Image (tube, rainbow over all chains, first blue to last red; front, side, top):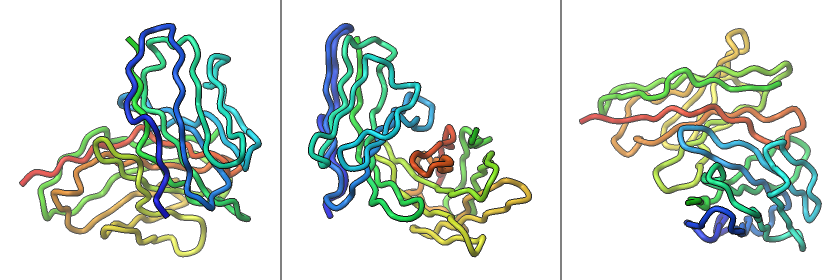
Length: 115
Length: 113
């Protein structure tokens, strides 16, 4: 068990550019979550996958955001036409589906700065 | 809708002193409650969780939390704080579907020597 990994750890981009982040969950975990954390705030839920199916999306996930988990393993989060308001820490978490709420294990995050 | 309130933005405690971080939640049914800790540059690490049963929950690093339904609270405690406990602490409640966590804004803990 190597934990949840995220790449890159830091990303600086100019407004209007597209960025893509990757998350590799814990190997036997079939649920994967994306959260966004802005300065001074707690993480906010963006979206959730069970295997390759995206089952829930927050209203925070605007049309410029898209997430995929093509083979039910790693996931990518893409932001198109970035805006300064997208600057935040993007956190990925994974869990193993069961009959009740499972513990979500978080990765170190990708910190995005949009100039 | 579910929500979590952490009334204290920043707390400073002397090393060796006791600690209590407050958390209040809003949820209609029996909640699933969590405390996470985040150190600078690190992800969130689970300290403890409450699903049901004994209302006093033990976690890692000597932390414990008590679920009080009558007060809608889930306060985190530690009897003796170490300098390495300085970090940001988040309380969270699971949403009704059990698919997402709703976090409070966090409490920053500073430890003075």
